[in-house]
Length: 371
Ligand SMILES: [Mg+2]
Image (cartoon, rainbow, N blue to C red; front, side, top):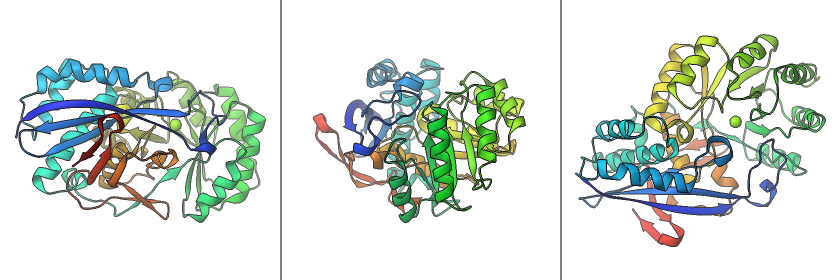
C-alpha cells in the first residue's frame, strides 16, 4: 500500500462561553485553529491526524503546519504507507527539530492507516490495553464560573482538575482555597502557572497551600517557572512537599533527559502534540519509567481527532497517573461526527474499531470526510 496524496485542512472553532477570556497567565484567544492531515493511499484506506496549535506557547500555527507538509511531501509520496518507521525516519531527516505539531498529525494518520489495514485499534498497535479506562483531568475556567463548573464536573465523576493560575497571587490563593474546601482526598488539583512565577514566589505560594487546613497531599504544582529554568525547578522540588510537574519545558527527549539528570520534577507531562507524536512519546514514557519518574499523558488544545490519539497512547502505557483528553469538550463544535474518544464518569475510553475508530469528520470548508 503506497501513499498517494497528503492534504491539510484547517478547521476553526471557538471555546464555549465560560472558557472565553478566563484569567490564565498567558493570553489564550477564544478561537482554536487546528489542521487536519488526510493521508490517501492507493487502496481505499484513508488515514487522518490532527496538528494541534498553541501559538503562544510553542509557536506553531496552521500556516507553519501547511508549510511543513509542503516541505516533506515530495519525500514521502510513493512510500509504503504501512512502514511508519521508514516514513517518520525520513521526516526526522528533512526536519530534525521543528514542526512537532505536524509530525504528530502525520504519525496519527499512519497509525490510523495501519490499524485499518490490520483490523486493530491503535492501542493494540501500541502493544495492547494496559487499562480499560483512565481518569482524565478537565479544567474549570479561571473566572467567576470556576466554582459552579468545578461542582458540576465533580457531579459528573471527574476527579482530576487542571486549574490555570492567573498571575494575581491573592486571587489564585483564594481560588485554590475554595477548591480545597470543595474536594476530598480522592481529587487531584494541578495548579498550572504556565511559567508565570519565579522560584521564591513559587515557594511562598507552595507554603501557603501547605498551610491550608484542607490541604491533603493532593496538589500538584505544574510548570511554575520559565521553561528554560530547569535548575529553578530542581530548587523548588527541594523546597516544598507539593508534587512538582514539568510541562511546557518538555519538547524533546533531550529535554526529558535533562530533567531526569537534574531530578527537577516529580512528574512529567508527556504530550503528543507538543513532542512530535506517539513514536516520540513512547520513547519518553520508557525514559520516565526507567528513571522512576511519574508521568501523565496529556493534551494541549486538541480537538477530538488528536485527543483520540492521546487516549489510545495513554491506555497503552503502564502507569500514567492520569490522562488529559477533555479540551475538545470545551469547544463549541466537535469536528468528529462519529467515533473517537469518549469520556464517561470522568474516565477516558476508546472503542475496538480499527485505527483511531473515527468514521466521519467535518472538515468545514473541505466538507464532510467519510472514513
Ligand atoms: Mg500545563
